[in-house]
Image (tube, rainbow, N blue to C red; front, side, top):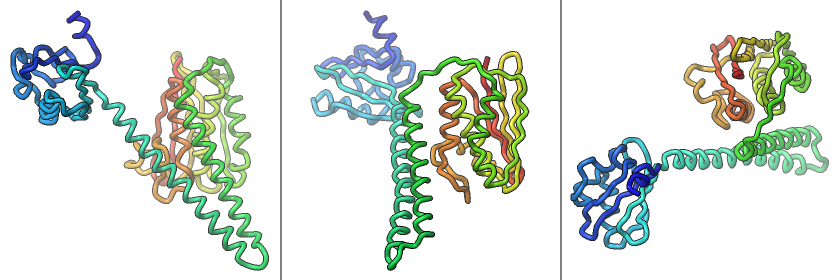
Length: 312
């Protein structure tokens, strides 16, 4: 029985009524929450966290039930089990990170939604303040509404990625997939006078085609949007024995070195950059689902290269 408890992926500490530690499993010992020479010592001689020491003291008196504490860079949750003489300790570091990301995401969504709504409200109020509606203002309001629709669509897709981890294994031409992407972005490319070069002959991919389309569309669209007018996007494919690498290069303004680690975060936008800041975040998440790697390099004033590496 002790061997089973010692192998648990959470901590367990047993005390007697005098507050002496009778047993601490491997989880607690390996993480330094309890020293190896704990036997027969009282809890305040054993626990290295002052918070945990106080929590256990109050728990023995029936006055505490749960505690979050930090130890050696990790976050733990301690809980008194029924009876008051056993403490369960869980490592909740990843949960805490997730909670923080959820708070940041919620705050970002609130801000991103309120900005266009406020703009539309102001435009409509101005347009309707005169005797005749102002067509130009109404068209600007409609443009904002369409931007809002795009934001909501992107948000829905991001949420769906968290719940749907199923992928298929399709065999298809990388060139044909990228031609579909280019065709769907033709309007944006023509508007900015962007020229596209595609060098992707004879390369096949085996992965989820629909998700690969979303991944590559977001990357190519990002290369178009952040390019200079009259710029160029070059897409290259390369097959090696164990991988397929797709490189998307643009001739845009580039990204500052200090900003590169941040570009895959939802809603991140560099200084002076337009857009929702979701394209590369979605691409990163889809790449993770497909088991692909995403790398980015950039030089200010010269452009950016994004590499997608499909293994196998």
